[in-house]
Image 1 (tube, rainbow, N blue to C red):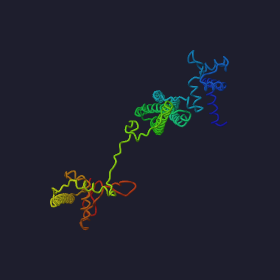
Image 2: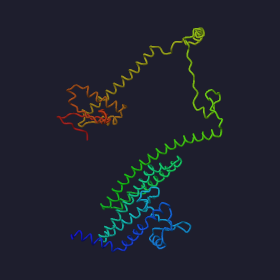
Image 3: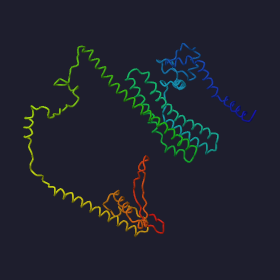
Image 4: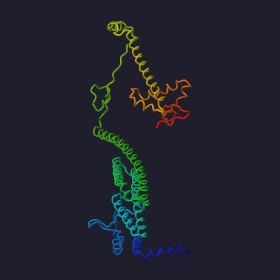
Length: 428
């Protein structure tokens, strides 16, 4: 036999010598022996005591498989056995999801303290054992979140198919929403700052308690977001159907109580009920009927009766032209001042040994121009220089692409500097 086979055999024999091994084996064999009666009790909600002998009942009760809540209730499966069967059979109607995150976190803190204490003592076997239990506890907590979300999806996809009325469907949605809120409240309890402090500088603990746990929580949060969108959509749809069904049912009940009721022509009534008269009144438009020669005399009298304002307008054409000329003069004056300020900016660049930002110069001098107009005038002035003079300057544009779907670039700033021996000295 090889060394690995000998090690496996020794480990197996060591596990079988453990008292817990024999006890667990007896309990599992007891469940398998009475599987038919136990499943029947699971489906009915209580155990038929006539299906067991008194000795078998005593063994099942002592084995923590059956119990009696009180003297008035019949014998039934224990909650942990009931949940085990529901989990194995994927029976979503009876499976209870334990999302007590606070209890898990307390156990995680205790297990980390035990792990750190074992490492300080140099007990590596105990530390490995505590690390394994800690890993199982973290995976158990995230797994219960996953089971709860899977239960929500199962309720959305199956429970509504077995519910007959709209009211029951809405109640199922409200139940799912309450379960979703409990899961979100469980997410809020997890404080990653405390977990980071708890893990300290231990890379294994930081990976287990921070990075892996945060990745799983983020994944579960995305799934919950999709569940919430589906719940809102279904609730709106069922509410709309409920309103329509309620209207039809009440109208049907009214017709049964008043079999001789006839719908009146409300459009021809002068006093329309407020329930029916929901639309605003229509204002009819009138037009002159030019094709009626018998009304030509009356139309002519109406036209002559229209008052006419024969007074001249207050503003003459000369005044209007003068007003337009004033606006043009004002615009020309502002344009000249803008050009002069840009010229001063170029002179400042010539006197400086570094490139100057157009936006910073505008803010420094407190000029009244908008940044877009100011930068446009600088670029226009640079492009209008003769080619020989333009070679003395270097203009850099700080621009960004507006959209990935076109090549439009927006200029945010320009840097203008002098060219010294072919080198461009940028501003620090």
